[in-house]
Image (cartoon, rainbow, N blue to C red; front, top):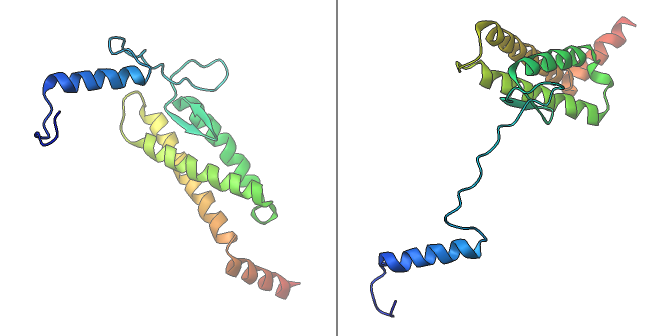
Length: 154
């Protein structure tokens, strides 16, 4: 293009530029990229497609439900005030991921029956309940009040 000409490209220059840019990027304009493979569930001996992730692992609906129930049982049994900071952060992160993923999966989509949807809703409620108890019990005002009440009774 000459200086002072209009800013419009003719089709030939544009095609040449696109082709040369593509070649410089290392691709061949006539070869299509390979189709992407679906992500599979990380549970042992499961080949179902993963539909969510929690704890840096991908799960199908059934394994997500069982993993969350196992982890929520463990989180509920842990005394809240006796955790080190790393464990407390890991539990808080799990509870947040768990409730977000369960909420996203509860929405009507194909392939999830009413029983699975009910279990996902139960997981959402349970994770939210444990998270709210943790946040209430880890606030300094609540801990100080509980300490004063326990001292009076002693």
